[in-house]
Image (cartoon, rainbow over all chains, first blue to last red; front, side, top):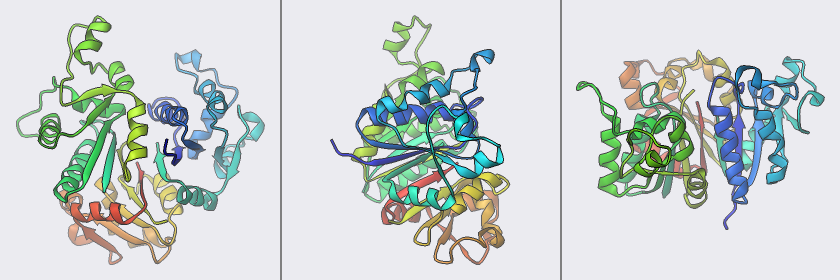
Length: 120
Length: 131
Length: 97
């Protein structure tokens, strides 16, 4: 099967919108079809990966749990915007999975090197 | 060129459905191929036959239906997004014991695998989305 | 590898604009569509964008909003047909929304 490099960018906080889960669903499906999928969490989306979430308190789905399954689908490269982590006082240890922190220049590079980019 | 279109915005609360329509129509007029149009997220409402549009507004359901029928377009509606929003075809309405269905040809329900296929087989995948 | 970026929100959505503009590489092109065309009247918005980046705004969207005559000198109005052409000429399209 043909393979393309897909970059899926999440930019929103996980709750109160369909975007975050919808983006992850695309990533998982593409990975299941053996595509090369990379995920980038920008702006508020770092909060999707916080390991302290208890979304069941307000009847929400746990996106962090979905994310923790990503490596099983061979999606091992998770990028997070460095500036967002810094501004919010978040350390890598607060997140559920190992991530690669990237700056704006690296993000521009990632976009250039991907065949398809979807930003939610 | 072979294009596929991903639509990700409400027909009543965004311009995504309309912008996607204009792009698709223009691409077809220029002789390009549209491999698939994939309705995802809130855009699934655009495929409901039950919407009643005021006479002085554009009926996006009718517009897409006519364009799809004229050009034999593969207009696919994401089944997971559609079901949770109450956009059902006859088999799904029956399966889930709902009162009625509102999705009919040329629209069809399918999964994200169709979007992945569209991404792989098209030269360009263009997204028209909204917050 | 030339990317065509589209942005469809007004510049008051500063986070979106900031992220989009920061991602533009010298060989890329930016197309303002829908409410994004509102940014086309403000030349200063693009001060930090590489000079080689071409900035376009979709004519039907400009006309809808009555601002076709107010475009900044570095922003060019284009038709739907040109949008399709631009999509062909660039390797991919990234939509910012």
